[in-house]
Image 1 (cartoon, rainbow, N blue to C red):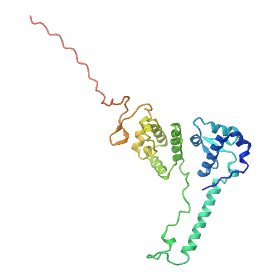
Image 2 (image 1 turned 45 degrees about the vertical axis):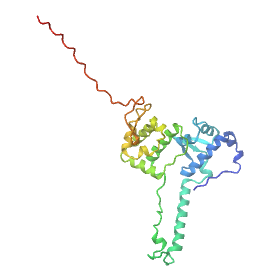
Image 3 (image 1 turned 180 degrees about the horizontal axis):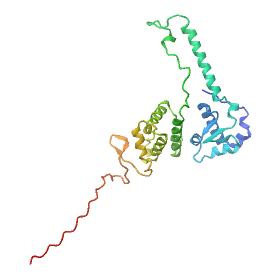
Image 4 (image 1 turned 120 degrees about the vertical axis):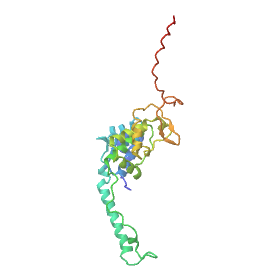
Length: 271
């Protein structure tokens, strides 16, 4: 957990007073997000839109008073690293604390030579695997982050504003799909999910629906050309749909056109 700093005179700072309570609330959430994600104050545009109102009024208010600054594909929190720990310093502090904890555990349980198990005679440090001293950082996959940001953007455009987290399971699913699909295909498949009226109406918009297999990606790629049509669920699997139809009940297979038959020739009179 990373703590941010807030001056005890912030309540009367001219910029915060000019911004107003609603904008200051957004500013507080953006600071918390940047601290959590270790971005050194950078906030992607899709994240700002996810926390802001539909019209983005509070974000623009923060830019006007100078609490936010424009940045490529997003915004930068003004003077963020001046008053808050940088991502590099936070990572260094965490690593130092982790190393100190390992050394403390070894001094208590490993070096005393006493067995701490009932049967195998092993010390606790020997019986338990040592944590990885170089954990994989969270922001390791730019392509995964790009696809996820696009999913959040389409989600916010559909009126859903509740926070959604990129869990390790979801990250692994997107990473797996990038081995058999391109980043552009995954973004189009996301568009297909949010273009499907049936999936939106039924609340079937979990990211797993798109990223769990290549077949699901191909399925939603087919939805990108039919944003306004409905789909009929297949019996037994509400996540699979048949061909789109325009009227409920009009599910009969298309009729094969028949070639018109030539008119019979008139019979000749027998003389």
